[in-house]
Every structure is written in C-alpha cells, then in structure tokens.
Amino acid sequence: MINLSEVLETNKMVSEQTLDVRTITIGISLLDCADASVKTTCDNIYAKLVRIAKNLVKTGDDIGREFGIPVVNKRISVTPVAIVGSACCRKTSDFVKIAKTLDRAAKKLGVNFIGGYSSIVSKGMTPADELLIRSIPEALAATERICASVNVGSTKTGIDMDAVKLMGEIVKETAARTKDRDSLGCAKLVVLCNAPDDNPFMAGAFHGVSEGDAVINVGVSGPGVVNAVLKHERGVPFGELCETIKKTAFKVTRVGQLVAQEASKRLGIPFGIIDLSLAPTPAIGDSVADILREIGLEHPGAPGTTAALALLNDNVKKGGVMASSYVGGLSGAFIPVSEDQGMIDAVNAGALSIEKLEAMTCVCSVGLDMIAIPGDTPASSISGMIADEAAIGMVNQKTTAVRVIPVAGKKVGDTVEFGGLLGHAPVMRVSPFSCEGMISRGGRIPAPIHSFKN
Image (tube, rainbow, N blue to C red; front, side, top):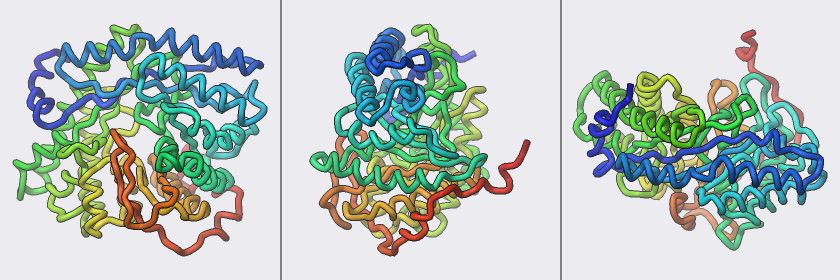
C-alpha cells in the first residue's frame, strides 16, 4: 500500500529540489469516432474528448493542492490520427480539420498539449499515413496545443527510409510555416523509432491501439532531487553512488504512484503506467547536465559522459521498477538541449556537439531532442540525422527520437528563444557534408538479425 506518510518524506524534495509530477496524461481511444464523413468524425472526437477529460485539469490541481505535490501539466494523448482519419480523409486539408478539432477541445478543457497527431510507418505508409504526414506543417502552423509524431522504424520491422526522407522535408516545411515564431512548430514534432504506445510525455505521446478506451498515465520528473542527493556523495565509489540513485528514484516513483492512483480513482479511469523520466526544465537546478557534473564531469561532452549517463539511466530504471509494478513509457534520462540550462552551458563552452549527443542517445531515454540547427540545413541532412537515431534504436532495441528545429534565418552561434518549458537554445553546427545520395535511395532498411525471436 502507498500512503501519505511516504509522500511526507519527500516534502523537502518538493520544496527545495524542484520535484514535481510533470504530467497527468489521459490516453483516449478515438477508434469509435471514425466515420466516412470528416464532419461527423470531428464532431465525435470533440464530444468524446470533452466528455472523458472534462475534470482532468481540476482533478490535477486538486491533487496537487491537497498533497502538496505540484502537478505541472495536464495532457491528453489520442489514437494515432492517421488511423482515425483513414476512412474519411482524402486530402491533407481533411486531416487539418481534425487537428483543429483536437486543438479546440484542448483549449476547452484547458490542457497544455494533446498528442497523437501521429502516424506509425515503421514498415510502410498507407495513403492515409502519407496524407497525415504531409498535413503536419499546416496542422502545426494552424494550431497551438497539438503535438505530432511519426514512428519510422522498429527493431522488429527495420526502418522505412521513404518515410525518413519525407520527414526531413516535413521538418523543413514546418520550420518555414512557423518562421514568424522562430520555427516553433518543429518543437512540437518528433520522429521516433520503437515508439512506446503508453508514453505520457510530449511530443511523442499517442494512445496505442492495444490500450483500453481510456487510461491514466503519469510522468514524474526529479532531476533536481537526484542532483541534490548526489551533492552528498562526492568521491564515493560507484557502487554506493548507484545505490543512492536507485533509492532516490524509488521515492520519486512512489510519489507518482500515489498521484496516479488518486487521479484514477477520482476520474473513474483505469491507471496505466508511471513514467519515471528525469525530464529537465530551464529552471536552475532542474538539470540532467548538473547530475552528470556531480558524477564528476566538468561539462557534459567530456570523456566519460556516455558512461556517466548510462549509469544514471540504468539506476533510475532499477529504482523505478522496485517502486511500481507498472513502470512504462520512456522512463530514464532526457537530454533536451533547450530545456536544460546545463546542456546549454555545455554547448556554449564548446564541450557538447551534436555528434556527442548522438553517442549519448545510445544509453538514454530518447534521442536528439530540442536542438536548434541552422535554418539552411538541407532536408537530406535532417533525414540523415533521423536515420542515424533510428538505427541506434533499431539495433539496441530501445526508443530513440529526433526533434530538431531548423530555425529560419538563424546560423551557428545565434540563440533562439522558445519560451516557457521549451526554453532557449544556441544554434548548433550540423556537419556540412552531404548524405543526399544515401537518403535518395528510398526503400526499407531490413530489421537486424536479433529481431527474429519468435
């Protein structure tokens, strides 16, 4: 049993170490909303979202106030819209109508983001998949709270290189469509390999087709807590360091479990998973980079960075799975550049490059995340970055992702301000050497040999 006394033990974490419940996310199936008419489909979607999630924001605020634990975001994830709209959408503008409907519902409900404007094309694209993907730039330019994602590969199926090539072009077009906002649309668009279908964190959240009609998923984040605890562990051997991280992750996960169970009870929606991810924010002290420095690095990017991140990620997961039987989503360490002041400092110091970040993604939760790059970066180079990350995910049987922002009119050394949780970022150098010949081949990279496990 989880009781309030366990949470009281974490009061200091909340008051002094920026512990929070980063999000309560309701996953909602839209499969029963599909209709041959776009208008009817949109009407069904709006009615279902408003009916199921009408008390989400109030419930999150009430729990946060009563338990003294900030519940920062309240969000919704939905069935991949490419599936929902396949019966009625015959052109990109049809999908944009669904996007606007989702955005209207999000505003009505007061949620921060709604994820699931998504397509799963790890082996190939249906006509509906391609239409949705091509509609993404317009959809993200015309909405405020919609997040889009495309899964282009998996360990079991390989990598759809036609989708990889198309997504490089889509990222560029999205940047152009939102150039008046520093290409902000790209901050709400992620390309994944091995995407989990129970992830509560944006921009990659969607409600998987294997899920029930509705489910509560909670994301907890505590990089400030881990960092504060490690300040008392300077110079200790790795074995003791790992034990400290595991114990801290255990306590943080128990907080999330309590909030998730309470939200489930009050909303009358089944509890799904806890995602224990060390997701940083621009706030001072809420940084994964600071944890790596406490482990002993001058800056992330120094020799030893990948080993330190692997240690951190593994022990966060070990502590989490001991605290809850339902740990899922991504669960580990995020390394978004714009959302982590320590990562920004490392880039500005010359310690951290995209190439080193790519190496770090082999052992962390996601991939190249919230990285500003020059606006004139070719689409093929973006596709190459996507292919590299997808290959890391495919071969290592883990989730990887790319969320890069080619900021229109910006060059290396410039700084771009996204605001709020998305933070700010220095524009980073991308290799000037071309991969056009490779990307233009098309087709599918087959699954690796270790995918055959049946």
